[in-house]
Amino acid sequence: MRSWIPLILLSLVACGSDSLSIAGPNDGASSGTNPSTPTSGSTVLNANWIGDATVVAVSDSGGCGWGRTAGETRTGVLWRVVITGLTVSLEEDMANWPTDHIPFSGTLDGQQFTAQYTQQPAGRCLFAGGTLSGTFSDDFSTFTANEVLHWGEGTSQTTVQRQWKVRKR
Image: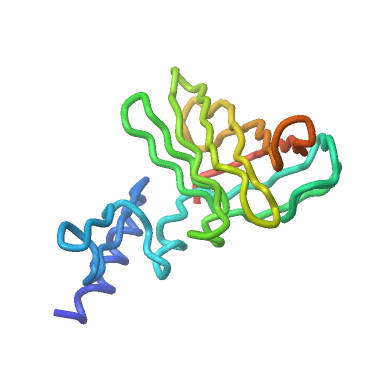
């Protein structure tokens, strides 16, 4: 039976499924986990898009992580995008799941989407979340997006704006 698992997974990936969830022995109803949530060994399989970003504006020097300097770029960032009716989930930086990715969720209106992620500022970085808005291509094989992220609270908040170009893997 175990020898069939890699063959089944390969078949699913080869079919070009837009979403794929891997259920392990501890997933499912008995553990109370969401079966669509990737497990640490499956993030590459769950990353169905890949993108490049350019930082276009920065308001302060707070926060931490990549992309806080105007003009900075990053390529090959893994995303997981799932569209269900008029809702969209856009999870950025799946290679850093589950501790340092950004799980945006929002709505889809035709080809345009708006999504957000909110986190209570805590810890050294004080990451507070952000917004992502953009447009899918006519065939939904690419999207461009404007991302605005925030670190800190109140008037001492650092804001970073990034432009994304993302495509299906």
